[in-house]
Image (cartoon, one colour):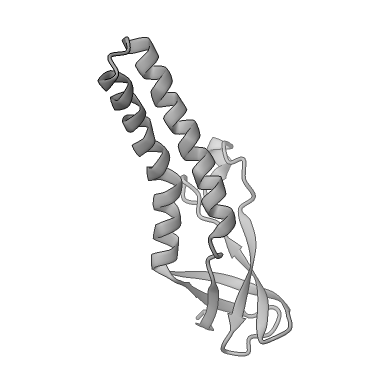
Length: 133
């Protein structure tokens, strides 16, 4: 997976800090909707394989597998536990209202697991692979 960014400063051990624009649901035209609550610029640490200097516009590469794995974990685990919680409640013969509560407990369990796994898992690594044209 590639992204564009701007080198903001050089770090030690052949690494650089890069400012990367975060994609938005509206395609970056936030003037109309004004619903974005997150900063649109992220600062990431990247391996500086091309010896870029501060101010250079660069192309960053990150492992697609790591990005997709993180997205799967964040979105699918709580959803799967939501349905599993409802199914367990139904198998136990609980009324529908209690089945809904067990499904919500599943979502909370999934969110907790995401946080715990996220703390242990290694970060997504970035590498500067070239300059923007």
